[in-house]
Image 1 (cartoon, rainbow, N blue to C red):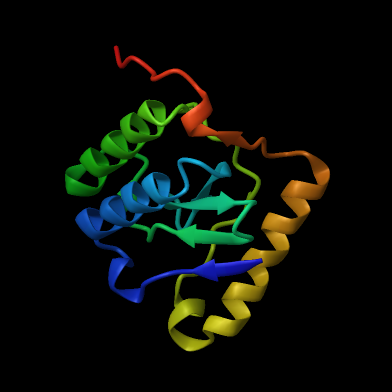
Image 2: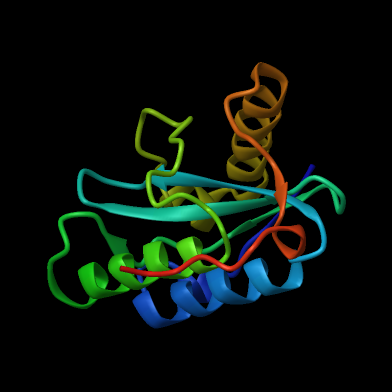
Length: 142
């Protein structure tokens, strides 16, 4: 499994949201799952796992789960975007410990290998479920 990421998205809400949107749009006809990954006690990012392309796209960690500030607004927007694409806002979290994003800056190969391992374990254990968004009905937001 190849992990795709852009260091320019780390900690930046708009760029993280754009990366998430683009990854979801590009994988609309593929078997896809989404994993919410904590990067601290109040920030997170998303892995968009495309089983058909055998790759996972890291959105960046510009989202605040405490809903504070721009990152919080971005988190709410990300959850709304995920719902529009048919993914539940209660994303299955298979990564219990926060990911140290500094790994990407110092040793991207090490971070990529670690994420690949989590994704492969989640797939094998059935902890994440895949869907083809194009085959589902559009979701309404409330």
